[in-house]
Image 1 (tube, one colour):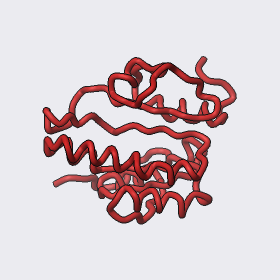
Image 2: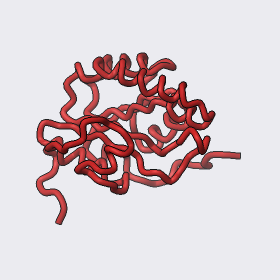
Image 3: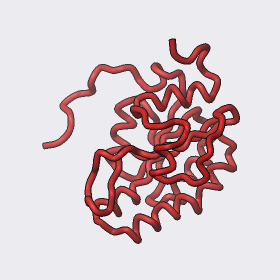
Image 4: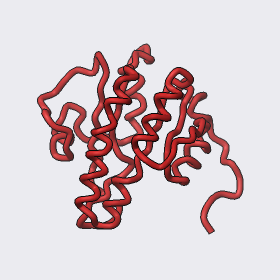
Length: 177
C-alpha cells in the first residue's frame, strides 16, 4: 500500500511563505502533494496547453503557481528521446501564454532528472531558469542542462529555490545572514 494514514503536522505553504498558492498538475501524486502542503488544486485538463490556460484563468486569485508538466518525465522513463523533445517543445510553444500574464518571478525547472538512456530518475542536477526584473544576467544563451550548470546560479539544493524566488519578488528584507 502507498500513502499516509493521516495528515502530517506541518505548516502550510501559505503560512510558511506568505503566498496564496495554486497547484496545476495533471498527475495525481503532484495534486496530492500540493494539497498536503495547503496549495489549492486547480482543475486543468491533461495537456500543457490546458495547464497554462488554467493558470491564466486563475491568475488574479493566487500569488504563486506550481505548474507540473508530466510529459517530459514520462517520456524519459520510457526511453523515448523524440517524445521527450516534443514535450519540451510543447512547453516552449505554450510558454508565451504564461508570459503574457507578466509574472513578477518565473522559475522553470524539474523535480528530478529522467535521462532517456537511464529510463528512470537519476542523480543529475536539474537545470533552473530564474527570471525577474532584478535577477541579473549571465552569459548563458540557451536553457540546457550544461548551460544551466555553468550559469550564475550554479548548482544548489532545490530547497533554496523558493527563497531565491522570494528575494527576486522583493519579499525578503534581507537575503542570507
